[in-house]
Length: 163
Image (tube, rainbow, N blue to C red; front, side, top):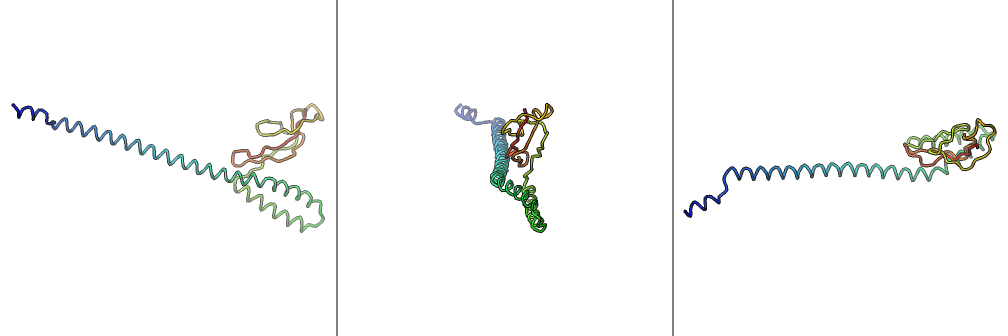
């Protein structure tokens, strides 16, 4: 009888198989979760790296915007000059600088007199009486150009609006 009690406590082959099958399922589940977590980590770090690159570029571009404004003012003054070689030389430098910034994703926001004012993309610095009813709510003057870096506006165009 003692032998019977010992043999009844000994696990059967079927129960061992079930136990091992459950162990395999648990380990497989752990592996799949770990793999999914790693994939999410890769995506997150890749996105963070891309955001960091864009942010660094944005800071540089924002710092260069006053220089771009000065070059435009200088270009306007050079146009008044009679020295064609001076105008041509400055124009070449200005164009090269502009092309370099464009290749890095900087885009001028095109705004002109008579465009409809849109608070989403324009910054109104003042309102003045419109010349006629047709110019009410429209842009009368652009005091500072706006720029986008990729799809993000880094400086809104500053405009005067008719009322």
